[in-house]
Length: 65
Image 1 (cartoon, rainbow, N blue to C red):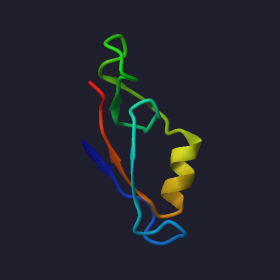
Image 2 (tube, rainbow, N blue to C red):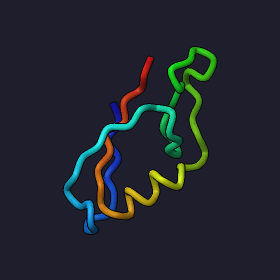
Image 3 (cartoon, helix red, strand yellow):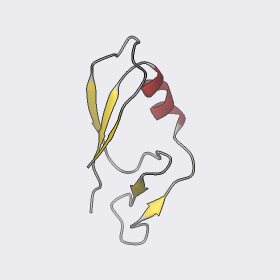
Image 4 (cartoon, rainbow, N blue to C red):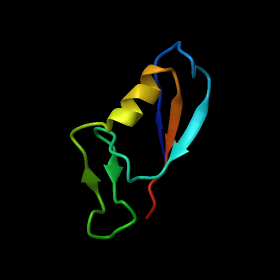
């Protein structure tokens, strides 16, 4: 499990959400539930994740393998 903290303030400040590992987050290993991608580390973050983090949300990122 990985914790990723967003902006210190914003519309979603203080909220927590869990995401499956099919959403790219730079520097965090992912597998999309597949042994083929196990251990893949993305170099970029999905735009939807960036927007939510910018709004102040905290992510709990759980790998699915």
